[in-house]
Length: 286
Image: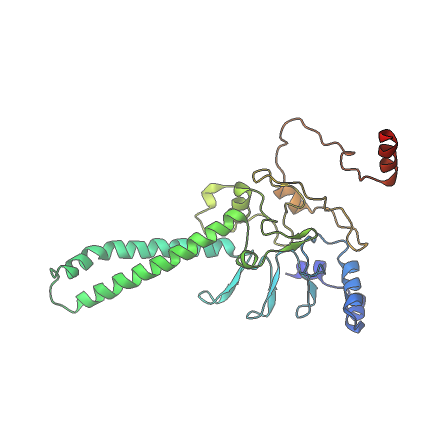
């Protein structure tokens, strides 16, 4: 957390200048200069730098401020009242495993009590106070099993598409606009970001998530080869006169994959059409 504040926090002079400025345009100019060397790809709805006035830091991609915890949470998914904590980058795998363990436990209870529930339903259970305990235990286990199964299935769906609960309801905004699949890199890489590369550690409560929670590879950097679609512009394009920063080491590691074929991209293939080329085409037509 200390390195996060040092990297994305404003310097003392920048913070004083930001607080002195009254116009939002001037404050954004300070933020643009401070964020020039940071690996940021998401913006606000208006295209501004995402800044937390409460924590006084520039928000990394997928980071949000939790009003209940009163702090910015990396890759925040939601605030869970059942665990009394925020679910984010550092504990998202643990939360999914918590749902899986709870689901298996409820299924085990419901399965072991089912035979006694059938006897109770057919009036073959002895008239004791235990029959009410059996009835209560079966219904509680069944209701929790249904609710946990729906929540567990929903979060598995989110993992497969590399979205958080917040991003599922409000798509992240990039330089080219909002894109709900902006962080999706294909099913395998999406699952690997949460559970890691080694499958033997997936069911164990060990932290195996990839990355550092500050930077994430996006389809704006590398197009999704599994989902196809047009290739977005390169992230090296400048925005509002501020050049974008290169990929971090974490993004390079997550995006590291063998090349497909021997195709080599032509660096001159994306040259913009200028006035000279238009004049040449008109002369050739005449």
